[in-house]
Image (cartoon, rainbow, N blue to C red; front, side, top):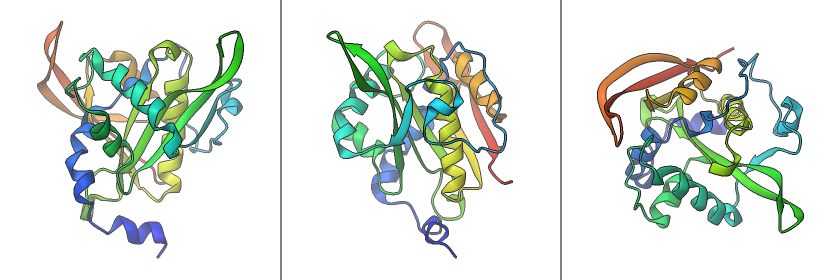
Length: 226
């Protein structure tokens, strides 16, 4: 039995359970790309996203020094209150406690951007992946995605999604489940479907959209087995 297989049998820590509401809701921001989407073939992507056609993009493991950038994107994403049932006034500490909770694996997407007349590598997105449930449900992964507003539409969400599925499989998870994909986030729904996720359940009127009223929420799922 591998170390990962042993860890999947252990119950989630209290901190992870406390912030699980964020995992259930942070589904789909990475799907705002307007580029054409293609399905995974065997989940054999590398960590350097330039191999999939996004020149200058790199996805790597997040470190403590990335916390400020992750928090800034996180706060920006939820401020509109249109796609995530999260209090827009959530504190930095609570948000980062979820993102870096025990048992989670967090990653960031870096890209060359022009700032002050110079080219700099900046974090433009992030995801975190962890067990969807404790105990007997720990072999199924759950993930959350955020993409900076100014970087959307360039395939970053798609790259994060592909990388996440690849990493979840490498980490020993047997499936991926998204618990709270808001139906009006149509770009996200299409992205996840193109990456092999299927709608396995609908929660009628489960999200109160500030402009569209009560809208449906999807539960999405795909196997990661060969």
